[in-house]
Image (spheres, rainbow, N blue to C red):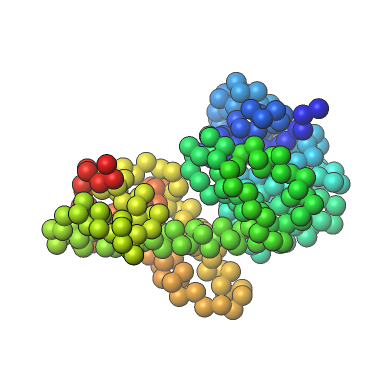
Length: 302
């Protein structure tokens, strides 16, 4: 008999995840958390839909969360109604969100009291990778629960790594996102300088791509920036949230994180300039406005 899974958060990434679970034979019940949420694509693929969070917990021994922040995760678990009230002993909650590690540890403790396991399983990858079932998962939590859920993880991801105890998945994800957004901030700062100086952007790109300054972010994001393609795949306000979480982790751990806090200040400025809902790569618009230049070149990466 196919395992039944409850799913909260059928957004940009969640839709592809749900479709892959269905394609691999799992039964999926999607929680319609707000009025007007279009789920026709998922119901056509075979998903069930409910407006009752209690029903999600009562009818599924595994529930997956793919939510914007720890606030929504906490509300869904310990709110009223919440999964803490409706899940039965032996259930597993899988948090795919990018959450605050301290919150994850707190929730794991509360669920453990009810004999329910919480696995933090944040992901890296894009919406097309979610659609293709080729995400990367870094998973923290009980090893036995992790092994039980491996068939689920294999249905949605290409790389699956158990990184340690509860909250370590979320900490590794925050570190990864900081490194990516630090690269993004560096690109956003230097490209307007190069453009204003009249540097041939394609020549510069070709040099850096084969030199020590290259990175996956530089190589894959700069061509889109130069084509003025800011299609939203990861909103700047979510990058801001992740870096704020990193700053909080540093304070709680008594570990200085000067680059994290500098980046947070830059993202504060970008949000104040109305860039929060744009793609994270739109950070460059902040420095373009200050510098009085627009970075544009259609021939990069081709």
